Length: 157
Image 1 (cartoon, rainbow, N blue to C red):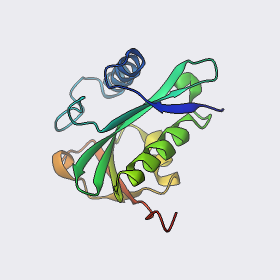
Image 2: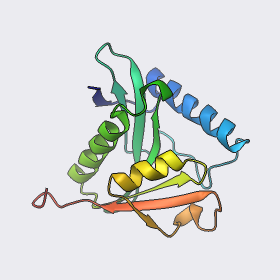
Image 3: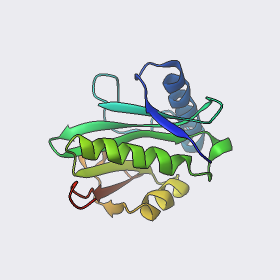
Image 4: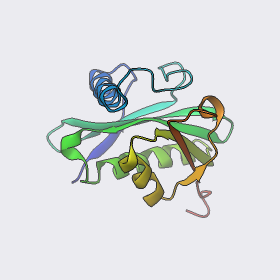
C-alpha cells in the first residue's frame, strides 16, 4: 500500500485519534490502563510526530521520536490501524522516523514494546532492531521488551 508519511503537531486531530486507538487496543490487550512504565510522551518531549495517510487522505498510522540524550532517541506511539496492518504502513512510518532521526544527528534509536505484542516484537526484529536490556523506566518492567538500532551515518547510508 502506498502511504504518505507527514509530520503533524502532537495535538492534531488525526494524531490524537490514532493515539487513542492505540491506547484502547493496549488497554484491552493488557487488561488494564497501567501498562506503560515511565512518563507518557507529550507535545513537550516528542521532537517529531508523524502520521501515515492513504491516497484518499485517511490517517492510518502514526509514530514519534522522543530525544533521550544527544544522539539517542526513543520511538514512541508506533501504531497502525488494524485494517491496514500487513500492508507496509508500519515500515513506511519506521523508515520515515529513522530518516528524520538521522537528519537530526541521532545515531541510535531505542524503543520499548510489550511482551503481549508478539507481532510488534517480530516487526522490529525483522526491521533490524536488536533486543537490548530494558533501559530507563523499563528496567525491571516484566511486561517490557526493549530494542535498539544504530543508524548508519550519512556517509554510510
